[in-house]
Image (tube, rainbow, N blue to C red; front, side, top):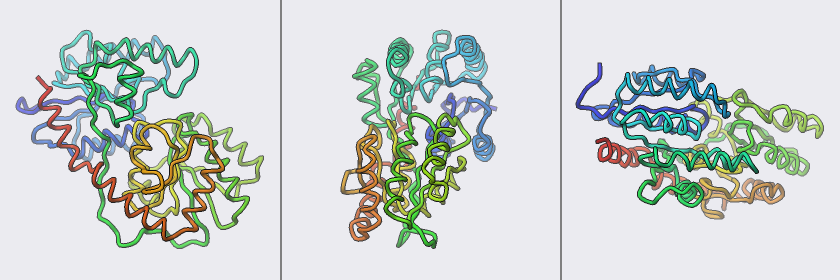
Length: 375
């Protein structure tokens, strides 16, 4: 039974990767005495089912495809309209480009406030005509968006400059993480080699082939270093090409491609790594990078939207231009070989994410925004 005194917030998303973390952080930290939260998304992730059951969150299966598919998209819009009429939320918070588009087109037929968080615009991962079409669709939906809740300053800038959102509709609610208690020393499992880890789906955005090329450069020089990617099993566009590259370059003993893990398992994997790497083409934020720094693990990442707001180059980690394989390999070796510099970076990295991206602090910003804009 719903409580008429609470603000009802319906989250709609495809729920994958960092978006899952974003929604989970909101649901598990928002004041449930003031807000009634609900989640509508495809029934595709066991971790989501566990989460909504654990926190007693009403869950509705809503199928939303990743690719543009007119008939499926029309069905999703119709189902969204029915869902909103039945649940009668005060606010709908849509996450990701596709779920955002479905929700905003459906909003023509209902009255709740619609907030939209792209969590990395889909057009950023495309080129040519497809990029233009996706960007045009984003522009088309501006009138049906009450507020654009950007996950970072860079996403806010793209929303204004590229998409054309007016300043009054754009608000930054920074993605945030749980700051776990600090350990006296970083925890790395005993082993006779150094482990380099990347977490990300095997898709264009994450640029996993760069990670493999860097692996080859590093392991050609050193026999005491191993690499691993965590992220297979969900949208594996690049898996076959990666496995072919590994075989052709005889890297079977140097790198592993592992399946996606639960958040608890991911955090443990990051704790046990020696250098955390991200090779993304673009991000809205970069949860795993912030979590690595929170866990006092050194980070080497690409200098792209989102990541360059978390990392201060040369101070809290290293930023490398996309596809500059040699520079990334050099910085990974520098992190491993210069323990004094690395210790200083991880200390400052934890301090920075604790100051800027603590969910316990930032959830209050979102609660206030929901409250002020729910009427």
